[in-house]
Image (cartoon, rainbow, N blue to C red; front, top):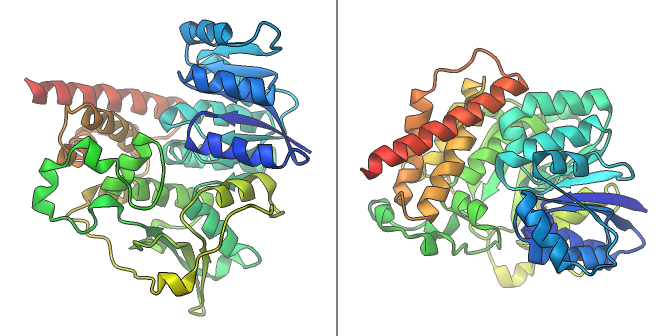
Length: 387
């Protein structure tokens, strides 16, 4: 029986994880749940799974959550970053599923590692911002870090049983998003409702927009660099519109091992939680005869420059990836609120990266300061552009 803390339990990953937990009550229990502001959904999860502790964004939402729960509910409610850290490090949890969105997941994940918890990581920004620090702590504490992103889970599965020294390159697959075949000159007209219509995957708003710009794949490139201790030059992105091949690993002898499945997240989540065992999920395998063909193509960096920006920031090192991530989060939010055009996302990130001079190091304090600077700089540039 494995006791779990879920950071971000009301989002897509967290909700799917709880569905799996509910299906396998002999395998998992829930020790703590956290959400941002969706206290209605969180209250229902608390009643169903009876965690010891729950955390939300602030005191207002903590009070609101308490009012939604039956008076007899035995759960401690905490809030803010300190609350998330308390949940992440809570005694009794064997594993922490990191499914918070964005930079907010970094500090709680580090707290979980420091507390000796195994990590199932869906929050890619944790490694994008502070990959070197995170992986050093993982090694020092001797905890297990399992990737939950479908692509990184696929890479992990394709590497199992093989020598790391035998790897030639990693091939990260990308669906190409909703605008794969759209003319680049029309991107300026893309509206949020258009970008939120992903052809294959059901995800939260921020990740869906990142998929439309291919920034999501860029962040995954940086994540893969740290997860698998591999050079950026050995990580390639290939467009695969069918989303059946979740990613591949090429070996020195020319062999390629791929992990395949239908485009859904339950398999990757379940494997992250239950490794090295596989759970009997009610998930079908791909019907290859019906699919007919699988196609692949190179990404077009002229139409999707965010992917190139991610490679650039990753290769610059220092705290540039934290700046990239922060600028992207602010720019995506501005696009969703119609303060930036779709093409303004990449141009704004590019401007912020160009304005950044680095710190000459990448301590946690420097990373947090770089994140703060990039958010302030992006907000300022957006306000200036609106005048």
